[in-house]
Length: 222
Length: 345
Image 1: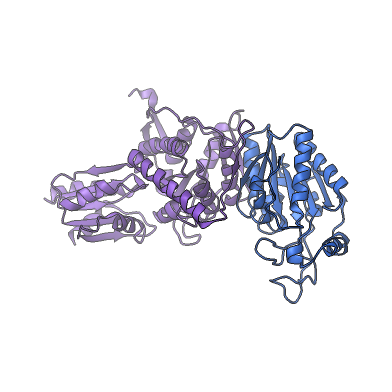
Image 2: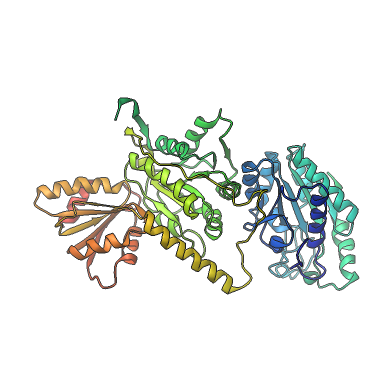
């Protein structure tokens, strides 16, 4: 069974991870799965699930899993990362893994800020968002990761959903696993909670996700 | 040796042959002069083979991390890089430091800082040994000629997988382009690779620690393992050191010119010896100190501003008080005439 979560109370990460584990167990894929972890809140998943895991460096999990999958082609290789790791420091490697259609599954947890380091502006921060590094409001438009990656890979499974839509979370994870099994790149972005840095309490967190992130980032398959 | 085993090869061709003979199966790399020939040479050799592969990545960072992933998956993977590429490679090599990954890098030194020259230098010694954040420990070999390059490349792979420290074959642009007759007859049994993470074993591996004490214990173990490895792998060459008055210290290709200079100085009646560290890390400390006690002067010769000299100073016994002079020619080749002139000055 999964161990106790090291994530903050109300964090969205455990929702994604527990669904991932549920699917792996249902499909009897636990032993084949290897979960590479980016640095950021993602690293806290290092001993959360009873599957193989290893931490990498910030922005480097995709490249690491490209190598792992090429070494162990029968494995189910996941690159688990936040939005900063995926779309800022790791953007180049993410794009190239997609361009080459590397058969790995990239899971991006988008909470619109750098949470582990205390709430700085992220590539997914929206215009006007107040963060530690944008005290007057973020001046840039956010990066639309799945839409961007779709431009360079027509075969991949690419989708976005939100952690408060469990049915779709499960469906997209299943499809992303199938895509890898069929030899294709897959990426799913999960719009996720960060009550600590959003400074929200209780239902406010869910409202923030619905009113901000889900209004801005379209969910669905791309 | 039979004529059949005698080949006329470049340094890059020797390295590629050594990688193949070492059992390497995957290369990840990005073209950069003067390391490119190892990448193209490997690709030409394995392009049609099913059990070996290559990937030209988008940059050295991706190449490095793909190697980390591949070695965790149990494949003998490596890269070849140079100069600014060596700088970028430190990100992944630092992860290999922290996680004790059998990461193999062929580093072909070129002139720096920055893009510098694409030709030659001995300026990447510090990067090869200490390029990561923290104090990761690495095995670094510096070959002096092509036959030795073959042997040391084989040992780089073997010892990387045996001891699980990132391992570097440190060469330079001159040696890589040198073409000469060689006999590649180094007999050694390959250490077999094993996966660190596989479907058969469940593992959770980290490189970040919650408590200072956890990291301290990890580093203590690393240091202990490294010192144990040092007893088994440290290598050096001592040349004409019996009764010598002065000891020249040089590594890599420069040591060749030093040997020529020593012959000439001998004919002039001077007793000069050469001490050549073959492993720059771990450094052959005991041998250095033994020789340093019996000579009047140490004289470092290198194509850098003093990276080898600093290694010598770090490893010299504090009780030994000795003059250290040198000939420092960053990023240019050194000929025997210059060495003779500098010694006689």
